Amino acid sequence: MLAVFLLSGLWHGAGWTFVIWGGLHGFYLVCGRLTMPLRQRLWAAMGVSDKTSALRRVGGALVTFHLVTFAWIFFRSADLGAALTVVRRIAAFDTDLGVFGAVELWSAGALVAVLAAAHWLQSRPGGRVGRFPAAVRWAAYAALALAALNLRPAFQAPFMYMQF
Image (cartoon, rainbow, N blue to C red; front, top):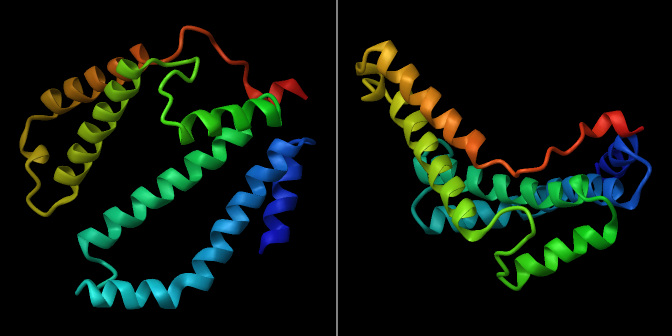
């Protein structure tokens, strides 16, 4: 499994950052398989053995999101030095990552939380969001999308695959 993901990293680009990106995804899968019995015992000890429980779904989604986002640091960095600088700054809780300030990062986090809550409310049987008229829901979605666009960095990064 690890070899397949290392090769997928090379397929995306000829650089160490892409190899690390692929390797991290493979490492995550290998670790997931190896730790599955331990995680099952931990969930059972916590009284959450049902795989469809909200706690397990939300917990799994949060862990997956953060692991994949961490791997994307390497995918999107210009070189290994830049990627490691970002990782060091994250490890030191340095909020000045050069693109967004602390206010923008917290605002984006809050926006993601609102969108996640809207999705959760919509997906529940008899969900509250679905009770609003379609025009109100779509106006809210458009406002959230515009807010997300306003949080983007001032510079425009070129489309990655056009660089080859």
